Image 1 (tube, one colour):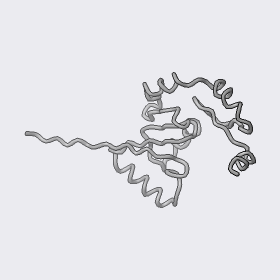
Image 2: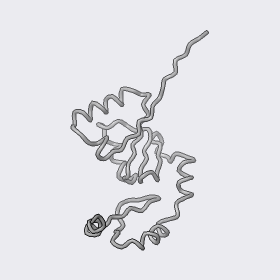
Image 3: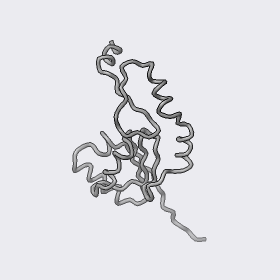
Image 4: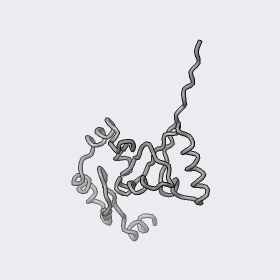
Length: 138
């Protein structure tokens, strides 16, 4: 009877801002070295940022290279080995996206919301005017 060892792989999906990119520099570097030392760890960066805002991080030599990037608050799924969308998941997301115009129309009934001027794909992000947010909490 032959015994074969199979490497157990693990997916580590982590938020970027305030999590993976946060904290004391020495502790972050220790974590990054740990991830790099274990090839069985599949790393996924998960962020609300648009892909355009994640690309510079992929070029940072101090950060472990992720296997996947999930950005645009989950609306964009990228495999970093070839920078291509993860199919068929991406097709499913795209097929359900009603479009910017439909979202803007639905959101227009909420006064005080301001569309964020950031790169966005298959999503629309808004700011709420601070005075309205304070009023609604009272």
